[in-house]
Image (cartoon, rainbow, N blue to C red):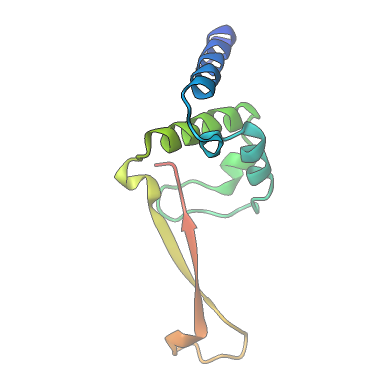
Length: 118
């Protein structure tokens, strides 16, 4: 569903003004450029295993997604809370080498994927 560009710009301006005058530490400000940079570093074809999201969803999304995600993260930092299922993760065991005993759990390293959307 399309949104009103003028209304969205007003929301962005109100949020920026509120952040500037709220006395919050600058770390609570998440910039869309940081989100875009993180998205650009994602590898294609990676799937979360829990919610059906893929890195491709973020890579192929419009640039405005970065703005919305940055606003969401800023709000989470400012308010200091998140939904309980917001930090679901998937642990994928990866063998440490090609010629290791795969029946020994010591020969694996865990790769943790943390997903922020449900």
